[in-house]
Length: 401
Image 1 (spheres, one colour):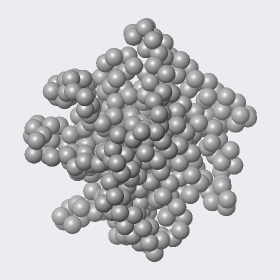
Image 2: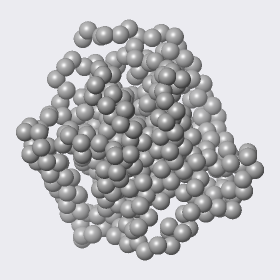
Image 3: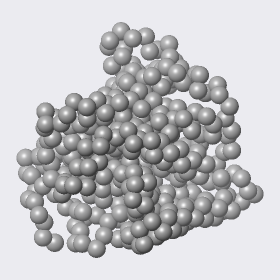
Image 4: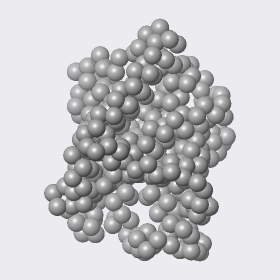
């Protein structure tokens, strides 16, 4: 393969120093299992970057142009992850550790939270995992989105008792709907296949063709780019490893609530009286090092994995924030606020709810996607017109997440 850009050795050295130092610190704080999860998250970040595996842009492109390629990649990822999760969720344990999926009730909180998250994805130019991998690859706007995530997460925690008191229905996992869990598995894979075919049909009607998932140009396992199929396979495998190491699916946004809570405590805000922080387990995390928090550690891994991908591809560039209009800064910050707030209401984000919920055979996962798509329809109208124009007018499109 002829690579367009050389490896950036200085940044590669920084990556090695950061990962080895963090690995040692995490090992001292939490043990070897979380160190392994950290390195799995590095692989996840690398896959997100090299495959440009998009969530926000997948919803946006489908609504604006009818292109369903990224949505179909979502459903492929969900099907692979569901198949990999199935035996361990049925057994309830893996290698001596209890294992459980993400199963969230369906109600007003889920619908509103996912809808707000969909709006925020478009204003913030990315989702939860996308913010981490954009920032890791040099998009400094991600810092503003992360700050917004923390603010929105705090607001969501503060208001959570109100939303949790609203009507909701808990249908449980599809694996418990029938006498045999295999019937639930067949139903679930059938549902994902139906959604795959449905969005393909929409694309065919709107564009006259269905763009294949396979990437025809040359690829490289280290330097990239990867096909969406390859990205989905690696993300599914990484998600399984996270499940086996941590006993629950991959999540992202709970760490933003924790970081926001720690920052609020430093500012003298009495967050310990708030719903989530009043929970003994979460209250303990507020007093501990973030290196004891699995979600924080895996977030660091995703960030560094994207940094590695950009460095190997010679693509790491720090964006000059001074050249970006202040309205864009405000927009991405507000997008982060909406995503942080929405994630707390909906029980997760595009990773914890959409991927983790669907792979756990919970109906809230696919429904999260529906409500987030509706929010995206509003978000693309609120998204500054100049940024949409620049995506199509220049050869440098905005990052795809």
